[in-house]
Length: 406
Image (cartoon, rainbow, N blue to C red; front, side, top):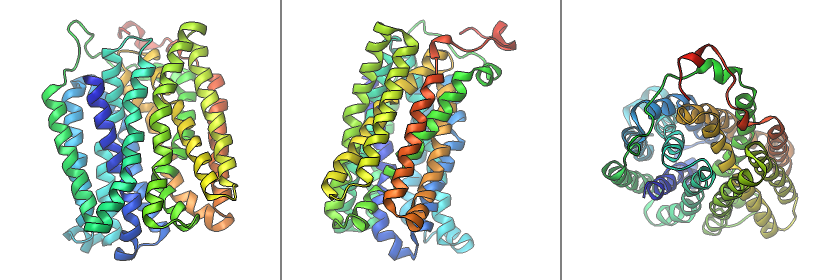
């Protein structure tokens, strides 16, 4: 039931996050925003999300995922709804429509930052080490479902009731899920370890942590292109109409929903067969490398439908690696899984804050195919970095070793 609720929360996080990429089709002309300005709105969310990953994970380790996650869902659901009126609130008269929108989306990102680190905190507590890859794959696989549901649902609401209603509906769904989570969830089984001081120096001194953050930054760069620009790419570049584009924009996220749990299962099975380091490395390197190939082929395909198939496969293969990435943080330190995963996910969102702005600029300069080709190279670089990621070696000893029980 904990895993089921995490899956449901995961669906909501990405419903709330992705709906703006579809609503932007009406928001931009209504509010007088350019593509680059809309990219700044997309990135403002990611900046807030990135800055608060570590605090969100630390709070989960300290106070438990039940309270922290419930409060976070309420917070981001309120700011999701406020997106609809950001252009008319008093703040807009002071800093402008663009500034008001960026502020609201930034604060929404602050709330959502607590989500995935606290997923990891709960999964690490409730599941054994050889189940965590699959558990995280299922929980985070809700991302694919939420992001897949968002384009057609948002487009339907937008066409029939206006773009503002899409944010009101998403906010209401979030408040309902928050109540369900807080009413049912329990922080830890009886006898589970309580919080311990965070060994920050050991994190910094461990090469695997550094390479994990860098590699996940590459995943974040590519993933946020799908989250922010894929729908508009289909409508403006591949010339689908609004509703067709919404349905086809779901394809990458359905691939994520399918391949994310599969990748978690594969990495757990490989850990049993070939050991912890190799089991995580094989999954991460293969997924990122194949994602790079699929994205590159899709970007340069002349057939719009074939391009959708390849680009969607690339997104799925990208998320095939997610279970391995997040399980590595638990492998390194069970007691600090929330904080350490927050550190890792900060990297993803640093990369994710760059791509929504850089991608349309590259597209203007050299074309969309080349802009997506750059994303493929970034994914390939992330795959190569897995050579240096060895969670089975653990954290390096440091001054904190005598004070922290891992």
